[in-house]
Image 1 (cartoon, rainbow over the protein chains, first blue to last red):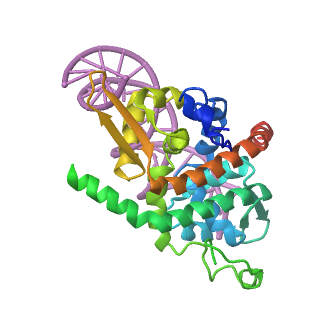
Image 2: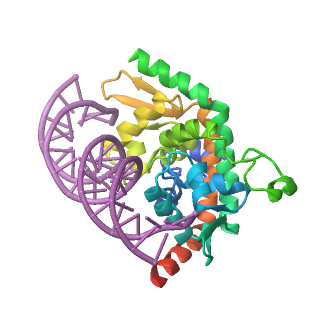
Image 3: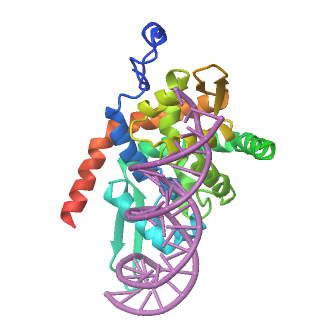
Length: 136
Length: 136
DNA sequence: CTGTATCCCGTCAGATACTG
DNA sequence: CAGTATCTGACGGGATACAG
């Protein structure tokens, strides 16, 4: 239970220690996933790939402020994790296309929700942040 | 369309350029949110707070490998963004409790899904990563 | 076009020590 | 108990130059 599902409040309400929210077993790989996906660019790239395959240059334009270094690096990492596929066409003008994998499709869904939540509450957060900064 | 919803594949399949996935307007605050929430610890703390209020020390134990510095820092940031509330009881043994706000409850839902996805696919990703590393 | 390599700086983040 | 301060090493990430 804890985060995954749970429901019964009795045990959790009785004492705060038993559940511990995340058993620390999960902590490990949650951190792993977050390290791979939660970095600055991964989610943006995945989101950018939502509509279909994109080429290197398209990606670079689409993600706006990303540098080649970070684009290459993140792309490589994503590919290494099996979240995207890289397809290189050995043509005279070299062309490489990146697409999402079935694996990342599920993640995309979550990313979409995150983006939705962000666009839904970003001004609210900004307001909080403003107020807190001003009040300090 | 793009990221938010869409479904019809005809328009998207026809040409890859028109939608551009993320209009770059959204890029800005998506980055903002990701910067605030997508860092190493924020999501873990939010997840840890899922079951109810926790004190500083509990949090420190619950999130396992976090240092005081990062815990304080992240807590402060989260509070500043209005995602958690800090309640200090002016007692002889000082006690401070952190709880989620209504705002972060929606985020918690997404975080839960992310954790669910992570626990669902972490071995798959590990396999990919392993294979890629070995194959290199 | 699609990258890789290098330099270089700023921030992240841990360890440790100290305060209210 | 609940933090803050400082020092320090590691990594992130941009600019530029170069290569296939």
